[in-house]
Length: 191
Image 1: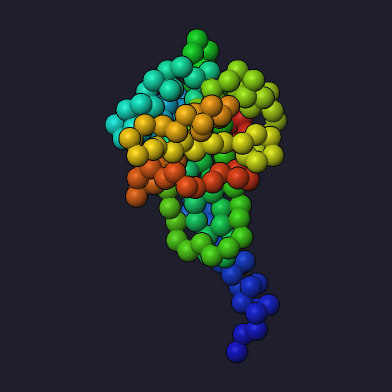
Image 2: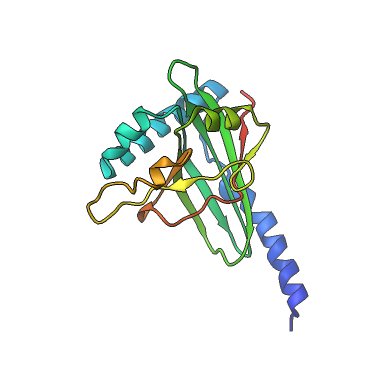
């Protein structure tokens, strides 16, 4: 009844029509920019605390970092074409918080919608400066992110912790050590 071209076109129309609705916030009262930033800060603090509870060693790692970017609610979804979007806060000691958006698009089987938190820890000043000074920073193009792995003893793999940027992703299933952010683009939010 339908050929592959027709099915592909229908899938594209469905993703285009339904993805923006899925990501829309259903707020009863419109949020001001200040309220949104306060909520982002609060959600980021909750995401960091959840990481500290699951991996207590990360508290020391983050305390010694040059900066940490926390995206507490990155939403992903789609049917044939997948999209991800989230916003978060970059915290650098002694400086005002900076806010960023993250976006990713992919092709492949992705059914449903998910939410995850993403935490990037900048361990070198050079990596942090390169991130902050870019007009748009893409994982795998402008820099790479290493995901810490834990060994049999439960401690971090020291080779991974020598990377310039270390990442953590937490989904409903818990911390994920085998995911990738390749292609994720981060841009400074216009606030």
